[in-house]
Image (cartoon, rainbow, N blue to C red; front, side):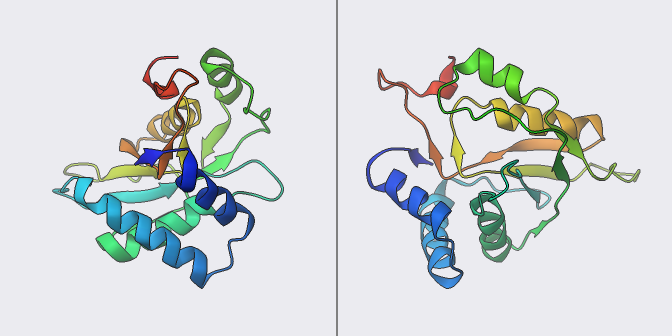
Length: 170
């Protein structure tokens, strides 16, 4: 995961606005291949779940990232999350307000089937991590329906004004 500034920020903003298929997939594939050295080895392949947007013109990147990860890691993805309500834009909200804004904002579209043996891990997918509020709300909805969220994969993390990462405790 890179810092959401400079060239990576510009690339992600362009990809959000102009997700045109092959070019976007190639750019995402390149970023994921750079990251793949840091991906954990899984005993059981994770189920990939993209975090959906609430906006009318939704962010296409989480779904595109899922598609590329399926190909690279031989995993499957499933659209388990839905927005249960609209949320405020979060650009100018701090961590506490983001957590309140996202609380209860997701619902799981499918209860995990009962099965014997270990539960398949779920890997949440998003493009940018700022405070973690969206990821926490998405994970809570999945866990309430019996899914085991093992982590989050995103392409960039937003730095705070002081250079520290916002998600590190603000």
